[in-house]
Picture (tube, rainbow, N blue to C red):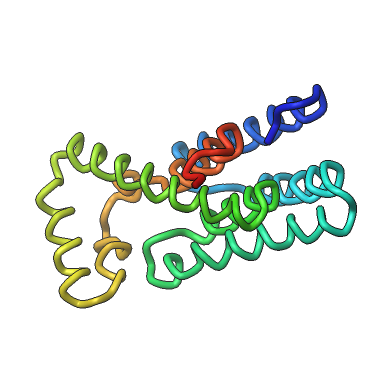
Length: 180
C-alpha cells in the first residue's frame, strides 16, 4: 500500500506515527484523543483521494470508514470496547478501504486475542478470563466479556486500541496479509 514512491512511503510513516501515538495514549491513559482520530481520518481521506482518482478515492475512504465503524461498533454496544477504539479503527480504515478494513479487523481480532491471553497470564487472571468467556458463550452474549466489575482497576483491562492499531498497521504494510 505504501510502496512505489517516496510520497507513499512518507504517507505510510504518517499513518504509522499516528497509530503508534494512539497506542501510547491508550496504554498510558486508556484514552484515544479525538484530535488524533480526526487527523487520522482526514489524512486517510487525503491519501485515498491522492492515490486513486478523486471519486473512487473518496468512495474507498468512505467505504473503509463505514466498514471499520460497522464491524467494531457492535463490540462497543456490547460493552467490550471503548468508543475511542471504534473511532480510531474507523479513521484508520479510511486509509485502508473496505477490503483492507475487513482484513485489518481479522488481524486485529487475532492480535487482541493473543494480547488478552498474555495479559491474563501476566496478571494471573487466566481462570477469571476463561470463566467470563464460558459465561459469554452460555448466555449467547458478549456482555460478560466487556463489563468491568464495579470498583475494578481500569489499568487491568486490555487497551484494545493497541490490537486495532496493530491490525491496521500490519494490513497496510503487508497488503497481501490474509489475501487469497
